Image (tube, rainbow, N blue to C red; front, side):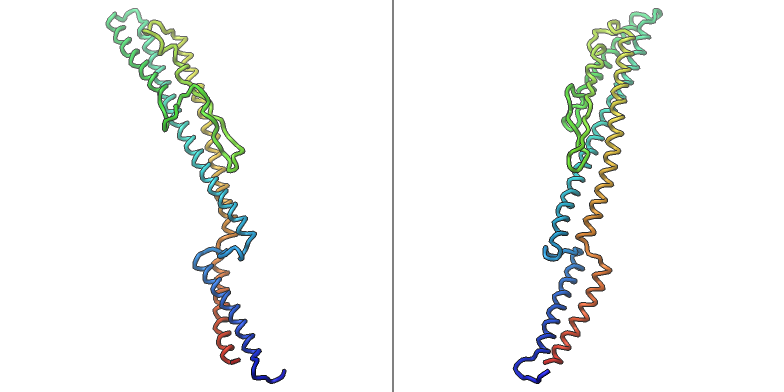
Length: 255
């Protein structure tokens, strides 16, 4: 190698190496301070694109999970009303039997009529109950509940028209106009509505469980792309820190 004065090749090489070390050191510092492995799109363009889609899927999954939870709460409220309606119908059947007792006086039967009238009103009130402005016992379809992140899977909520199931009771003028058969049928119909409600609630609970699992797995996959491995990056930071210091010393030596 020739000896020259105007061009200091060794210093240029040392300066270039120092610049590279400093750049890597700064990037490592950014990764450690931000917790993100991809500081700029240039770090991993493909990984960033995948991460953006995964993050959107995570948010959609969370929204769907919330919607399923709301549907479960709706059905639970609906079942509470149906359970109460069943108890009212049981009491009405008891009143009907007591009203037919030949040993009861006219005043006794009048008292039974009073209670029957109040229970009819309560059945009507139950049939008009709402959940956040939505009828619990609608006469038409409530629509479908989305249970998958991409919206391809849904569950249609069945109509629980309580009013039509008890119309023979609520439409009666007095307890004498209602037969035990009609009351028994209303009890059976209400029990059927509860069974349907329970089946749908069970399915939604399993769907909610699956959504929670999918959300965790999506977050885990995204983490492997976007998050900094602190142990690995700390090692790289120490390496570039030493290289930067030694590079500065060698540049001074070269000069």
